[in-house]
Amino acid sequence: MHDYGSFEKVADLPRSFPRNDTQIDTDAGDIILYQGKSITIYYDKNSWNFTRLGKIDNVDKKRLKQILGDGNATVTFSVK
Image (tube, rainbow, N blue to C red; front, side, top):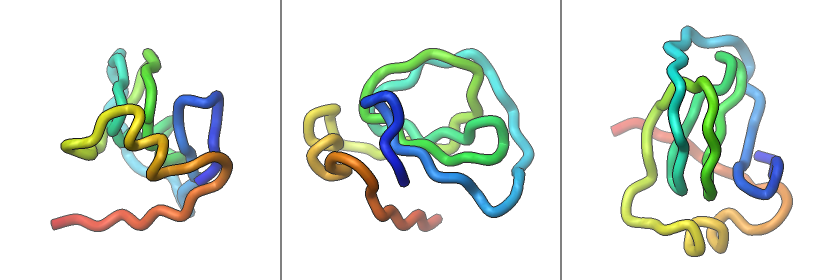
């Protein structure tokens, strides 16, 4: 995932996915589908029409930014 705007990490997906965009305010830990073709982890605030996929619990903005680091990050998603 690459850093975008100093508030999110973004990665393109291999194909488009169905979306249910609504106007939302993001916060640290939100996992978002953007325009059906990108997955995003927010470590700061933003407001736009998104499809919320999930949330990373028990982590604040400062800690999440430390975990993700500066620049690119390798992230693995799994579903329980």
